[in-house]
Length: 165
Image (cartoon, rainbow, N blue to C red; front, side, top):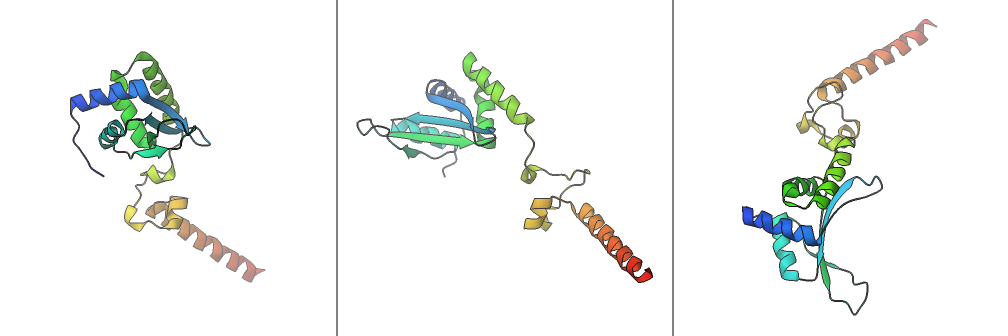
């Protein structure tokens, strides 16, 4: 993927393009996967927009064989949110209202575990010790050691209780 440093004219151009042809919405079962979509028939314009947005151009399936071939760019999640915030002041009132609503609802959603940097007790995660089980449980090293220590104590208590009985 080609990475390009954006200039202000590029950002203004994108704002104008997305004001006219863009779609700011959500997708998914929870409806809180932010989505920025752009659909057009002009491949050259779509390729320029993809380079600036950091996305990919894909062909869109024709609804009617007599229609021209159209192309789409779709951005999701944090990338879509970043563009919504970047372009916010350059868009019209209707688009700004839509983006404001989407971002407010999106921010209220719980953070997925993979984005969390601290455990529920406030300890930092040691990312060098990650494993599949660690990703599911999301325990820091300190909490994992404490959990193991308490588990050992419980097992010893059970063994001691059965020997006494």
